[in-house]
Image (cartoon, rainbow, N blue to C red; front, side):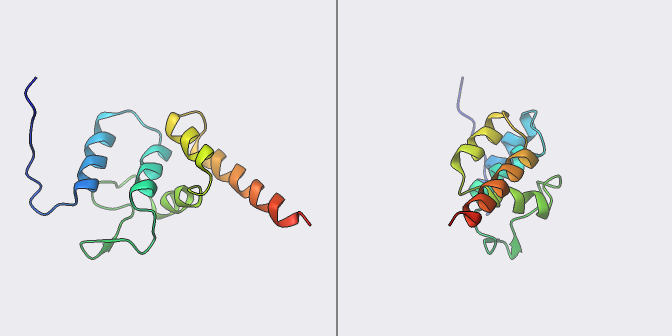
Length: 107
């Protein structure tokens, strides 16, 4: 198979890779949100003057889903489980919140 090259003409290469892979795979709504959170971990991260959020090539990724996914980044085990499809993003967020409350309540 011959390699195929794509001219990006100024488009963010990470955004392109995410868009192509999200489009060709069956994913839950949490999968693309988690992938975007990993690619753009900072809320302030800007792409072409716009925050990297649920717009453009990723209309199904709402700002809330992206925020939920970013809140999991400190829990590598949960990130891996969401990406593997073992748990849904909402369940992972609930578990992360439970862990935070447990930590805050410990003396």
